[in-house]
Length: 162
Image: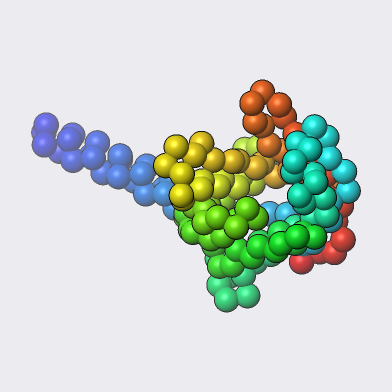
């Protein structure tokens, strides 16, 4: 009888783990995040960032090569970056806007309806990284970043849907 109880408990635990793994695997970025968004205004954005990349357009879309993957581009007046065929919760390596190699991860939190983009510079083992949080408010993509007790926001106007 004890063996049977342990077996049932293990089976129940496995079912919970499997269901939660499948639930996170089925998370998709909502359609409202897809499209082309051009920088409209910034609040508390660092001066050095504004000078370097005052004109920014962000493009989010479902990958043309894999319907379970995404593409994202940063189009700036100085440099463009393209992250192609990435999947949520999977870290990949790519060149950042600073021309350094980064480990990049995108996550989506369904509870807060927030897309998170995390960058860690590969050439600096002590890099704390940068994390950007995206939400959609009306027809604007809002990017938020906190650094040294200062919260910055950039507001991007939708130019066209994906």
